[in-house]
Image 1: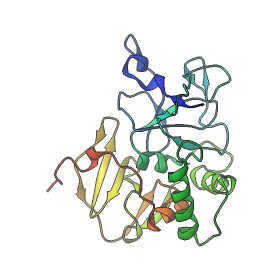
Image 2: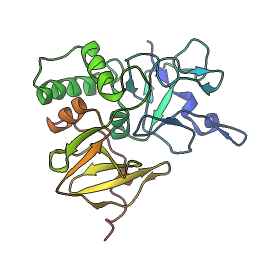
Image 3: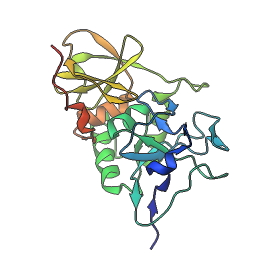
Length: 228
């Protein structure tokens, strides 16, 4: 039987002395070195040379994977092997432009695929079709720069990430928005009801969320009482 365990995610593998490895992904898709633990792993192809990230992505296949799948062990920083990345929660991974893996997360992949089809009013897509659509939505063509998309606040489903003041990623959660930082979620604030906002999460994924896909969200998003 073939399977995997992400051994590089364990605490003693995250640092070498005082050094933290650059393998955490933010909602905006940046790859950073922070101690924030994550619920998921994933990849965008081979992004590293040695133990340094040297490119933003290698293809249009950006997936989010389970930390453990059967008994496979995924080596981190191995030459010629995809770069193992980590996500605080699934809402962060979706905002960054990733989708569920069809291998290790088959049930989630099929749920996302069905919601993607319903929300975007299109036939049930192949993985390749979703990859192409998502890539066009998350990256400015010919660059490695992320794209943002304007939406009305009232049209945003729970689990969407928006960008406040062009710098602060916040998660839409019921009638609140919850800021995300490199140390986790902050205190919730009242969600605006009028106007528009720049949205980080790709539009086709926003449509999937609106059609019923429910991403895993870290409990820290609801731990602190809303700010008054």
